[in-house]
Length: 214
Image 1 (tube, rainbow, N blue to C red):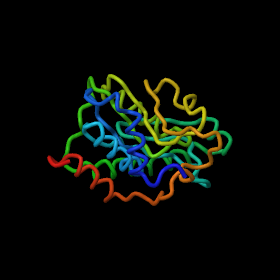
Image 2 (image 1 turned 90 degrees about the vertical axis):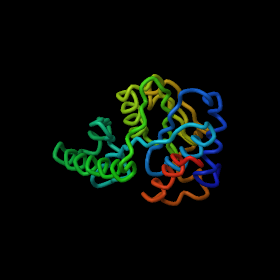
Image 3 (image 1 turned 135 degrees about the vertical axis):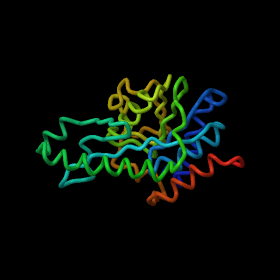
Image 4 (image 1 turned 45 degrees about the vertical axis):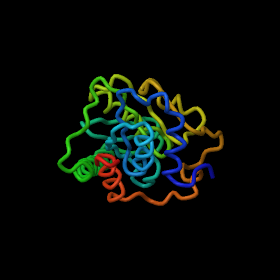
């Protein structure tokens, strides 16, 4: 194990991002698990916290295998190789996408409530997740940040597989990971506590970050 829990991972990640302190930064967590990590980063940088909602598109008969991702503002990222290898039909893909797009909308409404999105135009968007596996959701998040006018996109995670830069490509301007192990099976193997993050946890993180005492 490398991290005690997501809060510990966020503190370790924040230590790698101190050069951003004092700059026009918005920290954006990828719900759900990325938000507690992002909350620690935002606190350490003295930066505001928001979310970018993205959802993995799972192969219908093997949901843990990602064939792409969808996110806010109609962003869509597909992995043609996985779709081909798994034999996913256009009809099956459409059904998975429709379900996950509905979930993107539900989560965005639930997490933000009446609050408007934090503006990204001209700012550095620091996208934070609890780890990178295939990279599809991270790429989708990067594209959303670009579409919202971010001047610079930093993708920061506690753990990512060796060679993850090739999976992300030019979608982010800067990539930061605390550890990049060659032996990588799942994000959870690098956490002592990788219990599920709830909607309520996400809402609490955002509320604390936006309060005057935060």
